[in-house]
Image (cartoon, rainbow, N blue to C red):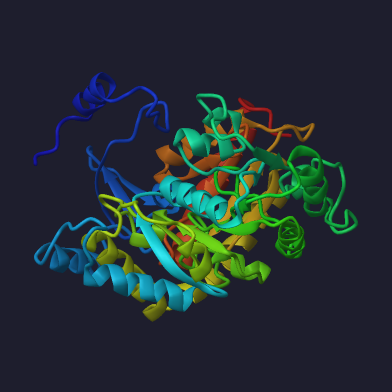
Length: 437
């Protein structure tokens, strides 16, 4: 297909695609092709990609090995639905049982993180017989009406919460502690408060506690090391299951292990996956212990869940991560990245906090009074795009820069990205267009 002029593509987008499908940048980026760490727009300009389609391009764009696995499977069979069995599906399920923590054993495959989380909550309610769920403020669980109710961001709720019994605990947001305390003297108040929340805002028996190890859309909010163990013990006392959403933290992203929750040394009852699991091919998965999985009785099926092509892609990604030692690369390169970002923080008062793990790092931008500064984020976005760097944003107020390059990222690419960020921050300070401190 020949590339159309950028203006024509943008015009067609505005005419034929729902306006709620918003885009980054004053002038939307129209991507024409991609390879490895870079994408090119229809005008031929190259960009270093440090957001990877929202942490979805886990091992680089259009990787030949992954594409070969997809092409090979497409020549065999492209679709079956869950009413039939295919070999990539069961091999992927077996692999997940092998590499996930604790006693997680049986998987159900869908198309997205939204579906994976919703499947997890249904299973938890069926297993426990309880209906109430504890989620986190600043958390994000998807775009279905039910998952909007679980999400802890007003900006992502276009309708009132539709799931009765969902209560939201304070997030482990140390930089903006909701209790006005400081870690570690806080004694994990954000975790221990979950018990009072259950006692006062629920019937006293819950189905589950659902959380991301690092809150993605929330701005890479990273809990203290002890957080999940304290919460798990509370949740178990009140009959609930621990559901860990690895949609953004999975597949070696944090550099600690294949899954982010391993950093907190906790074994969940249910885990969910999507995004980077298949390097951009649509997939969602929910894995649970055998007894929890058995609680979800037939009839149910997913038309595209367990698709042999997406399963083959996911298997190829997992093997690639293991064989190329990308977890170790995420740890080493991510540590290097973190040090460079801390240097930027020391240089520019507009950066209030640096947080994350591995190749999942963020910058929280602030005004001199430490309040959130989305204006600075918007300005940095335009300047980095002009300089050939793609970044992400997050946070309740749109005040956090999110950085999640593919796990194949090198130190030289880190240097290139940090140089552009440095120039963008410097330009903000010099022009005085944004109050940066």
